[in-house]
Length: 99
Image (cartoon, rainbow, N blue to C red; front, side):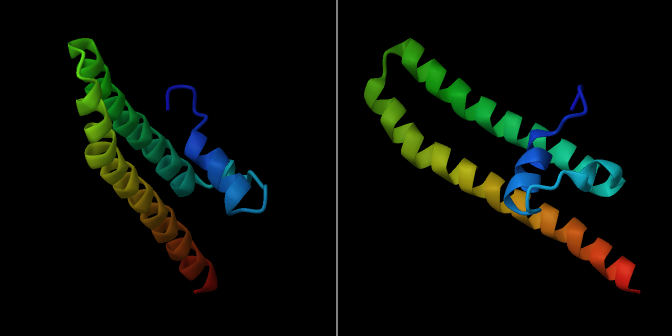
């Protein structure tokens, strides 16, 4: 967010926008991508922090359990929220352009 290059925007441009990175001029979409990039960074940091703490404690079995029980739900929720947020903004902009 600090360097104004949201990674989620680049990923969306490649995967869903046919390789076009024309979202830079779209203020609402750009801000959405910035906040989603921050959300992903926080969720990945939380997962890594929990696993690092368990590694530091020497709890190898607990790391495996945490990766399954904590990591995947956090990843799935973050992914679902990302899809919802992008769809919400792009759908609203399509409706505004059609009106």
